[in-house]
Length: 114
Length: 111
Image (tube, rainbow over all chains, first blue to last red; front, side):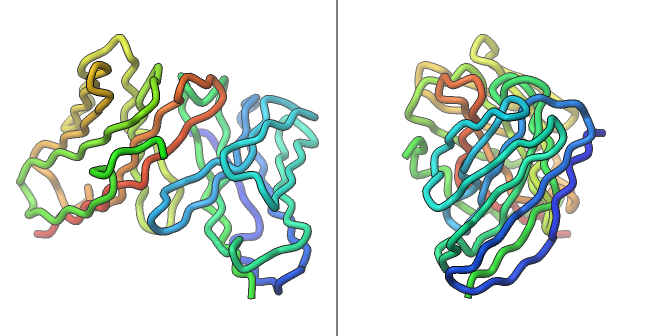
């Protein structure tokens, strides 16, 4: 079973704050993804990467940066957090592109921006 | 939006009944994924059906794909309480690295 670990599990910050969400996968997958989940919207892709040092823009990238430091580690950065970024964030990984392969999701990070 | 209106809904059925969830999409896709999400957890893949397949089965699950009408369905036979979850369809809109999720169908199965 693929393992994707997210930290922290819960985070509260204030408007304008700086937040980093972390994701680590131990399955040697080359693709990693960040999604946000909001009621009425399902999951929306923020950024994804197909290897260390690579970054691809998803469907809702505004206000987010991401960095893939190693094959295992993918970080999501909110440098000036806003209340609209209050959401449940999921990281996922896949062995090959998402289209033809299984996405393995972490347990999620719930972020509240006050 | 990539999705048709019927993708957003909630269903409540009794244990033992059959149920079908529908998903319609607006942009070409090479594949449709169906994921389920249990409360407090991340989504997990249950069926992946490719554009050259019309039907795929896995246990009590059956997925169909009609590329001409750009729609897919997921059926559960003899639903059990443990099938209670949110079910998402997802497509690639022709982009290899991306998967776009629908808004999901919340299924409640009661005893």
